[in-house]
Length: 100
Length: 169
Image (cartoon, rainbow over all chains, first blue to last red; front, side):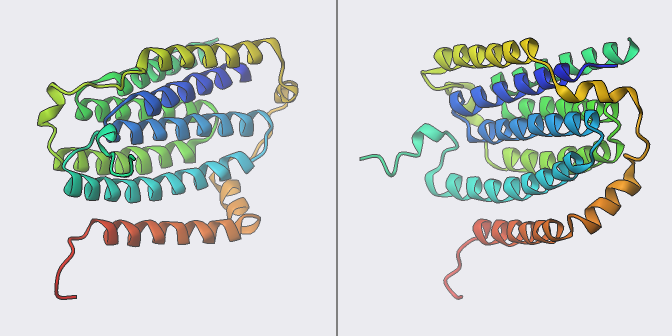
């Protein structure tokens, strides 16, 4: 049997990789994908605890997280298309319209 | 023992492909490594007796969200990608902070213990699709309906944002 702490460690590592990706990459696609990585880390955690506590609530929440992730990806990709059309770039440090 | 080996394989592939996702220069390669990652995460879900969610993971994440990403990446040209810098100028510090944060979490997890862990000796029946559906449609019916509204907002919002503005409205 795999100990619960292994799943938590895997999820923590995945979440940290996602955080570093969001903060350090310039390409807005990679940033969105890093957000998906973090959501997946949370999903692993939820399902692991749901299994070890023998409680289905964690799995229900994973369904909702996947729903929100799908809606978020659709809206965010529409925003990226809009940004790329208006500004001609997909690099976040070139979106400096609000910079004083 | 065999479970631990399978978990080690899944975890190793997940971590390696996650690192590759955030380090590749070409976004299309990143999407492909993301696909590999989602398949192995579905494997972890199967290992945790969540077969339905493993299927949902493959259908929704790998089948829908990732294809959407791929389409948009291909739609917007990536010819500048070969010369442009991948990361902003702070990335060595950020990677170092990431390692520190992960190490702190690992230290906390390894030094503590989870109270629920002993309970697993008794295998409780009933974590299948049927129980999940009953739970979802009775206890969590209102959140389920709200989730459908969120999906509608995503649908309408994506179409409204991405469509071209026309003069004759």
